[in-house]
Amino acid sequence: MSRKIGMWLYSNGGGDKIQDKIVKKLKEREIETVTDIKLHNAIAKNGHILYKKRKVDELDLFFSYNAGEQTQYQMFLYQALNRVIPMINSYDSFALTEDKFQTSFLLQQHGVTTPEFQLCHRDNSKHLEKIMKKWSKMVYKPTDGWGGVGLTKIESQETLDMLMPFLNQMDLRFFYVEKFLKYDNTDFRVDIVDGEFVGCYGRKASKSDWRTNITSGGSVFLREPDDDVITLAKKASKICGTDIAGVDIIYDLEREEYVVLEVNGIPAFATPEQEKAGLNFNDKKIDLIVNMIDRKTKK
Ligand SMILES: Nc1ncnc2c1ncn2[C@@H]1O[C@H](COP(=O)(O)OP(=O)(O)O)[C@@H](O)[C@H]1O
Ligand SMILES: [Mg+2]
Image (tube, rainbow, N blue to C red; front, side, top):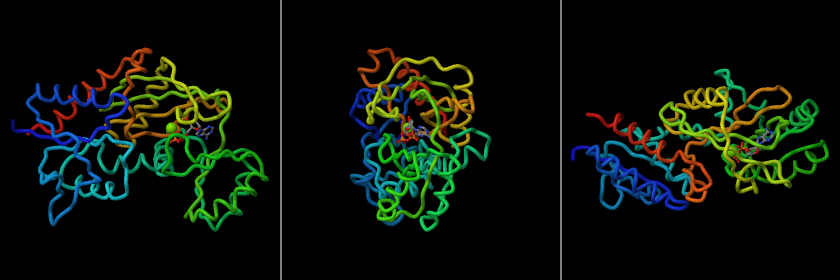
């Protein structure tokens, strides 16, 4: 076999089975796969990136799909590796989607509606008070968070006053805040691979939380997206340059339009339980990924 790629895919939640399927389908196209290349255990030595004596930089492509084990070190190697071989997602796109501010900024630049946001320097807390007066409710977001963790709803000047000492203590460089949107506490998660619509599901926040994330008590349900949602997700993915994306969309009841909350660069495949419940687009996603790897490694 002349083509060989590297892969690092999460193994929990059915990831191991997904990996087997991808490896098998690649083999049918005469593409060999080296699995479980854990970048965070690799080392860079002179002009090479080594993992268990293998030169990762000599592979034809690297498919990085492990959300649970991101470290700064591994991002560093990701960046270096992508200077010499193609990666899915590219380093630039992945780094972009890891940052909510950078993503929202770029999306709005290209005419995609996101929640109104502001970024201000930590020394400029006076500005936060001004924003608060204008918006009346806002969400403080860590720009590199996931799973709803660290998101804080600020509903009044008093909450802000209470929060400030904590935020100041955290040694942040900046505050990223969004206007708190009125919505029905449900969202759309739309998967896009290689510019194509793969599938969609919905998430609903629990009665006691405003966040739809599963880790915040939200639940998944089957949801058909209308064309506007699909078009918006494709556009967001294109702007971010992602080969694979899971776009989070909610409907803003005030502005009466769909808005993009964030773009996820490693959207999980449906788990076996979710597949049983009817989320049936894993195979389509696998096929699109395999086609894309095939195309990107053509010699
Ligand atoms: N501006 C907002 N207004 C209202 N709800 C929001 C807003 N931003 C996020 N949320 C809620 O919080 C959840 C998590 O936000 P998100 O930006 O997707 O971050 P995470 O990476 O933690 O999932 C969303 O799914 C949504 O339910
Ligand atoms: Mg999200």
